[in-house]
Length: 266
Picture 1 (spheres, rainbow, N blue to C red):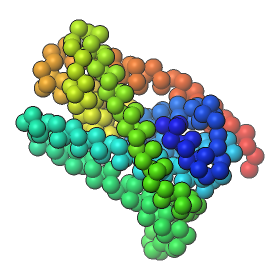
Picture 2 (picture 1 turned 30 degrees about the horizontal axis):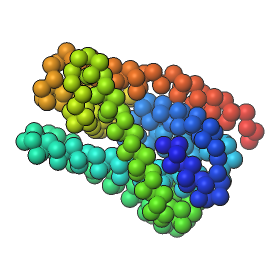
Picture 3 (picture 1 turned 180 degrees about the vertical axis):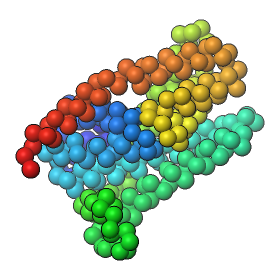
């Protein structure tokens, strides 16, 4: 995802080397997983970390918005693809359809709200809303994003493709875990299970998606004919590789950033 950020920053005239962006992307991983809220925690952290390395605040906010929209566009497209594949194989259930529909509502609402706030700029909100300091602050921050950057379809497409690539690579990691357990490598099976787990983890109000991802991914694998033992073991291996293994360096990067913030006067 640092590649998408780099494209936005370069377009804005504030290029930063990937070696400066990679630690931010690692720290964002922890915030995305540890803070419930449909993956928003890491996007908020992104603005703070970019400004720490000298990126103008408006450009940092534009990077956040493009990253946010790209993430949900990719997520929604892959969720629909999952549902379509299941429907074609007569495996789509009302529960799965309901979960995907809920995710789509979130995937449309959050980026739409961000873009609406950007269009409003500094226009006043209703008095009842203005009294909420957090909303006033969000509105002020979002209004700083340059409109030309936020509307750049090429940048949005790059962000969506980068996020889709992350989803697909994680899904293929699940396929490799199954292969290591002696089960044939079936990309479609791994994709369906990973997306089922991801959607459940996103919608569940639990830090790290603990339990919800494992249960949904394992259940999907079993429904597709993979034995329960292999399904559960492969899912736990995936979580170890994509969640627990990177979590410690992610936490360390976040702590480092917080210490840097505390040293900045005023």
